Length: 435
Picture 1 (tube, rainbow, N blue to C red):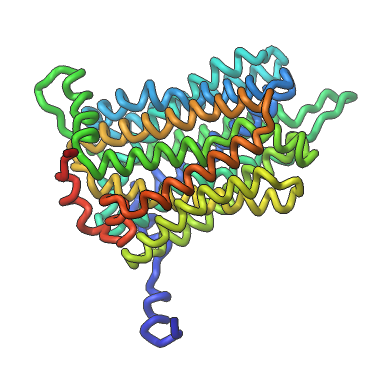
Picture 2: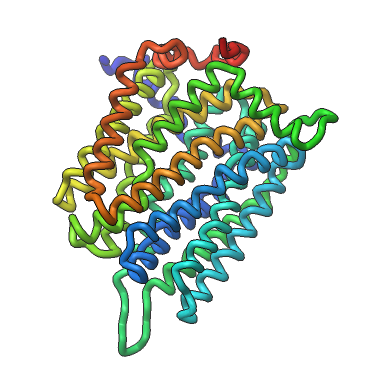
């Protein structure tokens, strides 16, 4: 593309942080930023502690599973609550629960009372609060920014989910290799308390959000209202297609956290710090793609990027699987974060554009249930199988399968429509029912 004055003006007018000019979004973004940093830092620290205590990939997978499975059990109910009560209140309560959880976990570890089953149980509590926070936050975003800023807001909001894989692990990585037997100083103690501090900040910023938006409920029973979100998704072809392909994406390309300790120790010889570095590089890729999409304005470009991100999401794990070099592994995880986050940002935007506001919380709950459930299950399966089979092969095979699915079904009606980048008209397609 030639650098004409017209193109230069277009580039200079791109505002990558446009949504942050809206006070409630800025406060929610900061709350989510610190919460996401704590979440990913805790994934690293907790996984490393379990691996040290048990030397078992299966237990690492079980802890990761316990943290993620609440997205199946909790999010449909929280989606209902997000349509019935003020969405900001749901966020505030969940951030406070996670602050208390992190504080209790930090004290247990500091006093040397921690056991693997403690970590499994506490991971479930933390995962439940995290799972409850996500649909409430997703439902709130379209209420606090105008529609023309929605992709920018979704991209920035998603950066607090994925790009914080950089900030959180970066904050704790220097401490995971510290241990002084003479003084009793254990850097992991400090890492746990850092996670607690992050959640304290997230709770404070959440308290400052003023928006009082709720959804809309009929006079039906709790179960009937809850079922409305499920019915809406399952009877609407674009929703069903998008959520189905996203669940496959999360299952086959994003369920790798439970095997990072194995990669770090057995393939890279990098011990606990290696887990942090690998996760941080996922965050670097996530941050890059979040900024790219925050400034993206051309709808056709977004559609092409969606297809590109989908294919690269399948290819990048294959590169990691067969790497035995630390620097190449870090490069592969950057590509993983770049492609996976780009795919998820565009999916979130599509879901928000198609969702009527009165049922948005319940749709977000159903979406999170399928996506989170698939990630939880396959993190456990990958962790369990790693005690018997080199996870390089399973991760590579899963990535290859997803890339092939994307290529083979590239002309499927809804996916083809997305690839063409007709984002602004997606709302009317939400009326398309399953035949």
